Image (cartoon, rainbow, N blue to C red; front, side):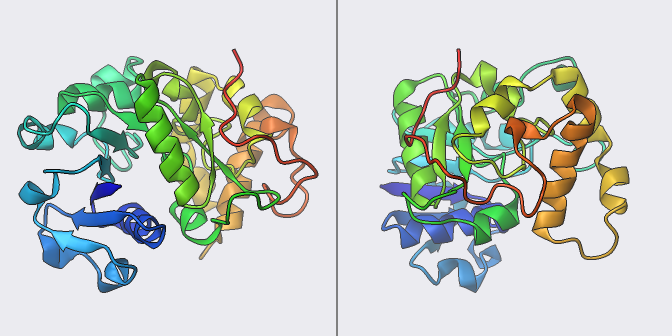
Length: 277
C-alpha cells in the first residue's frame, strides 16, 4: 500500500519504519519539514516528504500528531479522496499533553472529535500501546503470546485496512467496533497500554468505565512519579494494570500480575476476533 505517516515523533517514526519493513511504500511528513524526519526512520526504505505533497495519491494516511491539532490539517485534507483511509493514533491528556477541551471533557469520544476537526471519517489504531511496546514487542503473526491492539472505525473497509496494517507492525488486530465505541481504548481504560493478548483484550474493553478511567488518566503524574527515575516499559505497563486491579479487584482481562504482563499464554485466539456484543 501507499502510506503516508504525518508526524515524525516516536510513534510516527516507529510506524513508518515497521510499515516500510513490511513492504509498503511509506512517506513520512512533518509540519517542521522533511529535515525533521530522523535518519533512522528512513533506514527501512521510508522517504521524507513535504506535508502538502505527502497526502496526494496515497491509500492510507496515519495521523501520528498531538491530540487536538487535526483541525490545522483540514484544508490540506479537503482534496484527499474519500476512499483514502485515515487512521488516528492520538490520545487526550488534559493539562498534561494538551489544553483541556470542553467537548471531550463533556463526553465526546476523542476520535469523533478528531474526525470533526479534520472534516472526514477516521479509524482509530495504535493509540492503546506504549511507544516502547510498539518498538520492542512486535512479533510475527502466529507467535504465542503476541500482543493485541484494538482498532475502531465506522467504515468496515477502513477497519479492515487498519487491522491489516496493525498486523504488519507486529501485533494482533482486534475489531473494537465503531468510532463511538473507541472510548473503551482511550486513556486510561483497562485496555490502554496494559499489553494484553487477543484472548485478554475483549474483557478489558468490556470493563471500561468512562468516569473511573478518566480518574485513572488524571492520576498519571502522581503514579508515574512514584515509579522513580528511569522506569522501564514493563514498570509502566505494571503501573497501568495495577491502577485497574486496585479499582476492580483484578487485573485487566483477569490476567495475573506475576512476572511481566502480557507474555505468552496457553492459547492464541483467531486473529481479527470481534469485540463482545
